[in-house]
Image 1 (cartoon, rainbow, N blue to C red):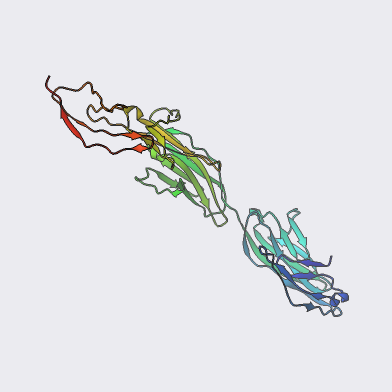
Image 2 (cartoon, rainbow, N blue to C red):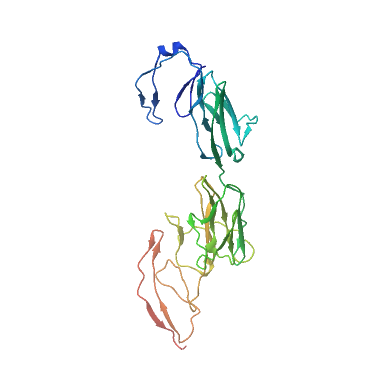
Length: 347
């Protein structure tokens, strides 16, 4: 086939014949998304008898930066008579045999670009009347690659060290940390220290608390791409990690429509560690734990009854007490009564 198209849309005709002048040539383009087509004006080709001449380069390339993994065409179309021969060089040496490199009439195509494809490329065209050469520098940028890591579960008060290592990629590489989608700012407020070097960043927590629960993401970026690796840190109570069990739902304890846990008339038995876990089937689950502390104010009693009268036991003699009444149902709390102050008798 004497007709070929370059990656830039140019038409190249090799070994031109006189009958090539009998056709009308048009360029037709099609929009990638809308499908709309457009057509150029017609062009005719004038073919003259060949005249011996030195080679010329009609289409050439220059220096460029490209991302690893892509494909590129280095154009080099030659004119002259007799038809010139084409030879490609890389860093001053003939191209070695590689299935990723395809020599065409219109130039050199390289697929699956790698870092070792960087270098100086030259196209040399020669016939019996002379030679011509065009060259350009190609630089392949390699995106960063994060070495996978896990975050073990830990407990309150422990130390935590998380290392994020970039195993490959062109410098400069910028590494940042996010927690639950928010940039981590190291310091006393977050309780987190971050140390970053060229290819590694470490996140350090000197004293783990429940607020450190969450999803931690290491993000590495350079001129080629931005990549990330995310893992969840689960912090449990003091001592050995404990097993959480479902919270029993009663009229006093309910889950609200927004996912919050409502505990009415808090009892001392309600104290402990609570874990909220959310998932939607996409990506990893997220969770948040917290501790509930119940304080006792004196000898306060919490009495639940269905009767209109109640007896209180264990009261001290000649002591002041405050009493308040609250009615509630599963639909919610009622209005609290005014505080009633009473004093027990000496006998």
